[in-house]
Length: 76
Image 1 (tube, rainbow, N blue to C red):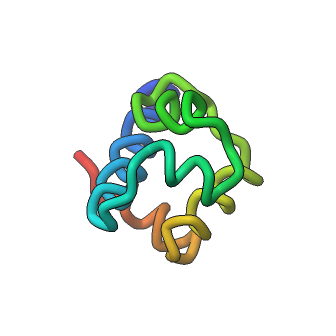
Image 2: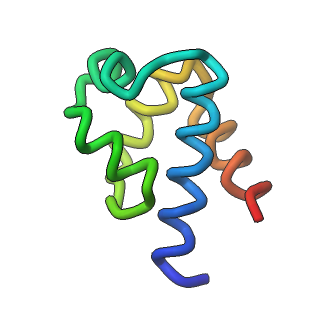
């Protein structure tokens, strides 16, 4: 699978989960300790996210990291 496609699927999953919890990008960035523009880049699929930040994002969404990856696998 193409790298860009993986990043887009990850970003869409993060955005969907964040919105389902009614959290703004700015608030979410504050929760996970990352800059808002970083979160924006993640959600747009333009950022290659490190494992450390993937864990921070999952924790910020109050889900297991494995649940986040399962969400990615379900994205078309």
